[in-house]
Image (tube, rainbow, N blue to C red; front, side, top):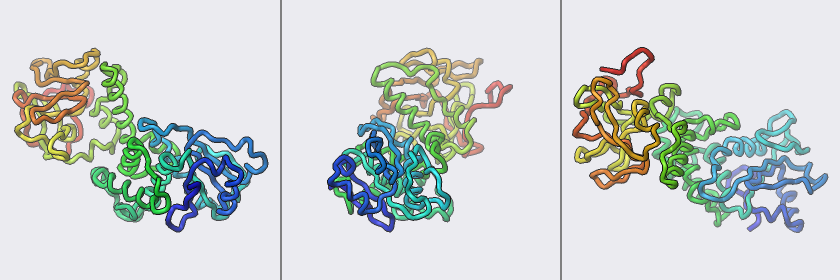
Length: 370
């Protein structure tokens, strides 16, 4: 199956590279009035001579493997596709990393998105476009409706991506992005499909946290602690980035404090749920897991794979838990990795005076005691 038209009113096509490499199939580009070609594979029109001037072209050089970062390219890919389907009134170069041809930018165009087989990489970009352009088809809301929270987007991400893929499969049954790309499409939906500019994904806190997760996975694979400069302290991220996903976590409003001195260790937004899925840990668990927080810095930056966590109050210093970059098993048998565990017998959970309190860092000049 060389080329397939994606269902809907758009002149959007997806397929494999054969249509470009075999002259006997190249006529399809003209038959379908293709004006823009998005290559989600290394490809160049340099040997096409004058014929290349017919098209606007963008190439994303990426391998079809689960750990390839296709997510960072979605903003530019979506903008390129949309610019091809709905060209701006003024003639000029298209968005993204585009080689300008002589396609008429004032008339409606048709876009061909391809990779090697038209199965994974190209389909991922087409699905990303559909989720961006038509969210209401796949369980989202139209752009004119009220904003949707990150928590709601996270909850609906898997179904939205599956529904968009089913839409493409109506025309291309072999469409099947690899598991890593499917997860990245879910993150794209969770972010709200940001495409204001080509670097919109790169700036997004959800993407940055996902990248950090990849750093931690690599460290676990190598059985080493992450480098000190790579450690991400979530309260510092929140403190310096208003509107990060941490502010939208929904918890029961309980702070975690040192049992001995009452020093606050974590506000509700930094408690990590681990069982049952989507809820806080059950009272029977011996551990309360939290995000990586700046008061842990002395323990974590030494390069140890695991160790003790001590109360940051210099007048206390009591052992309040432990950390393990490789992860640890809770008493409820849930495995958490990496693990920053506060021992329930050494801390108290108390109702927060501000249930939505986002952080435990304090401004300069405060000693951190409560």
